[in-house]
Image 1 (cartoon, rainbow, N blue to C red):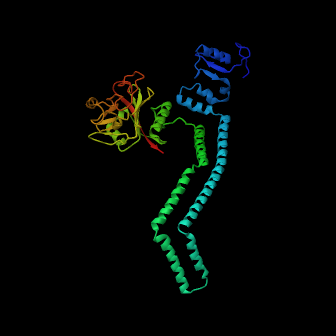
Image 2: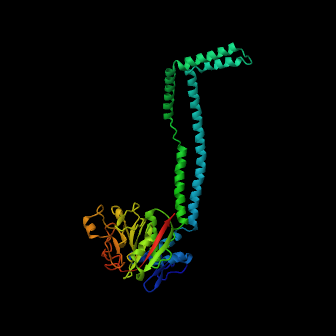
Image 3: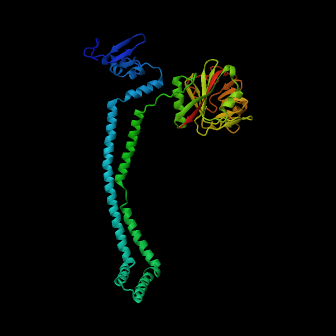
Length: 424
């Protein structure tokens, strides 16, 4: 771009400034003036002309209102081919250093091997003195001198001499010999402590390997960008919030999602608690999404197994990965550690219930008032919401916790969808 700015001589247009009803080409001096006046929003209002001309993903990221798409394309933009080449060069240089270090480590092992051979020889020589090894060799030498002789008397004499040697050097003074050997080994052990095998070259190689793993992981994150997650066959969850839900589940479960399958959906005319329990009974990793009469979209996910129960029972979430969500308010409400024992409540007399209080968990007041974070009764029209009992509620929006999920006091469900997740 070589177009001169008419306001500042010698300066070229570098940016496009977005205004409410128009745009303006500006140079670096125009840019500085806007910053000085605190009237520039760097995030979206300013577009780099050169980058926009070269990269459509950059231009798109400046206009989309989806935070997930902005993050995705900013990651693509951040590393061009030159940056990737530089990172690869750094990895290649480190690999070369490690190859050299492998040679040094090999030399180090040869040095320690030599030290071991020397130590073994020293122990061997000292042991020869302790057990008078030359006497044994002499007796075996005498036996060898007989060569082809098969004179029984000569052989018997050799056998007796070796027996006497064994008796004198081992059996008759076993304790003395053992103590002498222990003393020898103790001395050599102290010598070895003074020259402990620290393997400095191996330690250097290990540090290089850890560095290589870090660089490889960083490079892998660049060339494998995190695509926004998608939930197929849903009419209720927006693409933007789909990505948020998937990211939350992956983060809390610390697992990769293999599949998200729509296993049931129902509209107001067919809402039926018996049918609901027939669908969910015995199933785990379910996400249930509701739409209320006020068109608020909300729901919850839990890894817990739903169980038909006539008397009613709470199911504990050992993983702490359950959460309630409000798409309308773009909020996630994770389960509290102290509320994990009441992740869901299973009773065929009710619809889905998330959170609450048992006699063993929480306050007596909440127990006898039968409050839950999210309660849908059997007709799917009545129920209540009191986020903050078993699930976290940060009151930053100042929204009434009893209406923020439904958009009204009671749920009055128009439709719901049930998804089952499977993990790798």
